[in-house]
Amino acid sequence: MNPLLLTDGYKLGHKEQYPEGTTLVYSNWTPRKSRMKGVDEVVFFGLQYFIKEYLIKQFNDEFFGQPKEMVVKEYKKYVDNYLGIDYDVSHISALHDLGYLPIEIKAIEEGSAVPLRVPMFTIVNTLPEFFWLTNYLETLLSTIIWQPCTSATIAKRYRTILNKYAQETDIRNMDFVTWQGHDFSMRGMSGTESSILSGMGHALSFSGSDTLPVAKTLEEYYNADITKELVIGSVNATEHSVMCAGSKDDEIGTFRRLLKTYPSGILSVVSDTWDLWKVLTEYLPILKNEILGRDGKLVIRPDSGNPVDIICGFKHENPSISKGVIELLWDAFGGTINSQGYKVLNPKIGAIYGDSITIERATQICERLKEKGFATTNIVLGIGSFTYQYNTRDTFGFAMKATYVEVNGEGREIFKDPVTDDGTKKSAKGLITLFEVDGIVNFKDQVTPQEEEQGNLKTVFRNGKLLVEDSLTEIRKRIQHDNSLT
Image 1 (tube, rainbow, N blue to C red):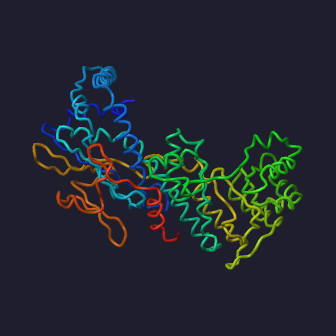
Image 2 (cartoon, helix red, strand yellow):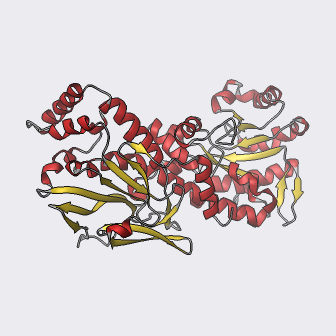
Image 3 (cartoon, one colour):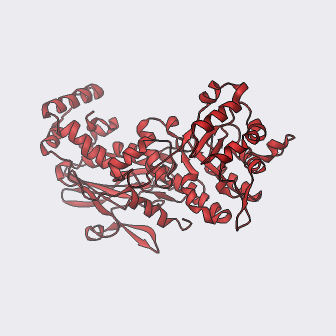
């Protein structure tokens, strides 16, 4: 599709609505608030994907690379019939004649943590006749950028929590935390691109992921190399259809067959197709020698119920239920007491839970395991769409707003500050620069053009060209450097 059609319909008339003589529109992208308790910084991520995929590839392939008459005629057909007018497409024709997007984007480094209300990047037109293009791109930019930033921020929050508890209960096993948060979200996201954008954000903080296309996308857009570095990974794992096909009457036989099918490595088996507690207290003890004899780890996967209670146990007349998964695995397989005094399961056995995990539940799971004397690294959490799809652009209040224009050669500092709002929607004013104080990013608005040229916002895209190209490795280092618990 012609990417100029990827916009909100109300953008079509804005070219005529700016004051006569407008030659420049300067805007910024900013997270304005947080709906997540304890999160007051947002990770910046996804712009390089947007630039490569849309501003370069799709504009070149579907607009500039197509015959002018064809793309302009198609654009006019849809807009004429959409608005019910004879729409003037001379500006679209002029853009095609130019052959590139006359846009400059200045951004902070991807992977950086940006406090609320601090802009992440600015965008401005580079040729006066294309002033209309700056905010025309807002819709496309917004629909792509908010999700990777949001998921990267949420993943970082999970990583911080899991790091904290691992440090307190199993400090010698900190490297395991990169696998402790596992992306289970793809099937529940709003589309394939949504799952990839979110999954890439997750992969900044964790290596565990079942969203396979993330690996290819990070290679293509963020210079990763799956043959030379750990991008994402997973293990052999069953689903309920496998267990059902083996029949309820012979579930232990299915376990035994799977153990023989995979004599080595990690094997994850969904274990609550029928009776989780029977698996833990009857089948696994019978299979104990076979499990301990494997060259690898068997991971038990509960898949229903309240994850905090299932993993940690809760008050119940059934003693198995009151103990929970981790304690029952300890009863059956034992383990060691680490130097911090916490129980670590035998390395031949483990558990993963991937249903309805949230930040709050992850925290509760870690806290209750710690209270029971177990290292929190005994459990892996599958973080799914219950976390990543339950968000919107408003989770962190993302918005792109114009703060400076030039009309008839005169610069105008512009802003919005609705009297009916609580202050969230109040924008910056004028030109902007970013700087750091004690490692924390700050911004200053109403600066001079000379000041705007300085600071932490660097030109990453100008006139159709990507000028700064980041790698997954570099972005992950920024995330880890920013996290003092890593």
